Image (tube, rainbow, N blue to C red; front, side, top):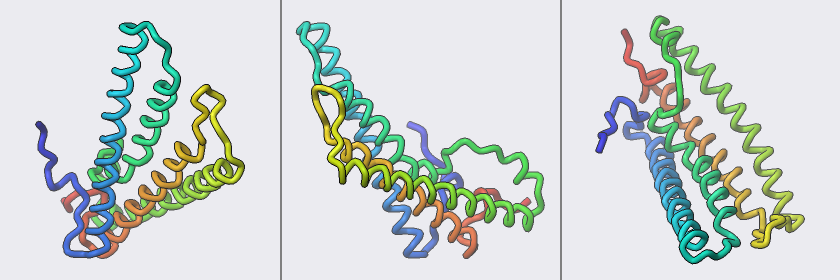
Length: 182
C-alpha cells in the first residue's frame, strides 16, 4: 500500500477552519470510495443476474452510472486536498517565490470563480429536477433530484476546499502550489 507523503497533502496547521475543511474533504473522499465499491458490487450482481440466472436487470445499469458520476463529483475536494489533480508545475518551479505566490493566488481565485459558476448552475439544475418532479425515462423511473444532488454537493465541497487552499496560502500555512522556496 502506498503511503501519501505529508508534503503532497495541503497543510492545515492549527487553523480550525482549515482543519474542518480537511476533515469534510476526507469524509467526502470516503463517501466517494464507498460509492465506487457499491458500483462494483452492483455490477457484479448485474453480471450474475444476466449471465448466470439469465434474467433481466431493471435498475443496476442506471444505479452504477449515477454512483460513478456522484463518486467523481463528491471525490473532487479530497483529490484537491491531496493535490491529486493533474498539474504542470514547470512554470511555478521556474518562477521566483513572489511571482509563484501571485500566480497561485490568481490560479486559485480563478478556480474558485469557475467552480462557483458550476455550483450555481448545478444547484439550479438540481432544484429544477426537484421542483418539477423529474423522473428518468427508464423502467426504474428514479426521481432525478437524487442523483442530480451530486452536482451542488460535489461542486460546493470542491469550492470549500479551494477556498481553504487559498486561505492556507494567504496566511502562509501552506506554500504556493505546495512547492518549497528554491
